[in-house]
Amino acid sequence: MAEWNLLPHEEAKLLNVARDEALIAHADHAYLPNTPALAALFEPHEWVREAMRRAFSLGRQAGAHRAREEIRNALGVK
Image 1 (cartoon, rainbow, N blue to C red):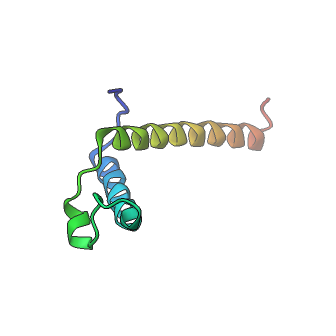
Image 2 (image 1 turned 90 degrees about the vertical axis):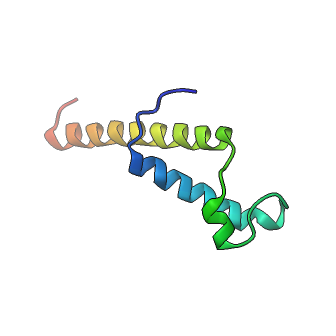
């Protein structure tokens, strides 16, 4: 497992997204929770959480690169 350096509240947000998506997808997958109460207790597979961490980290990096580019453009720096 890679180290993504996510803060606890970021990890919690990702877990909540995974739980929400599991509830939405339950019609196609019987093992997923089918009520909000069950979804709140659901623990997604580690590979799902790892993929979400990676996507979050890559998005954060892309956002940082975009911000630097916009700052350079605003300052007229090439």
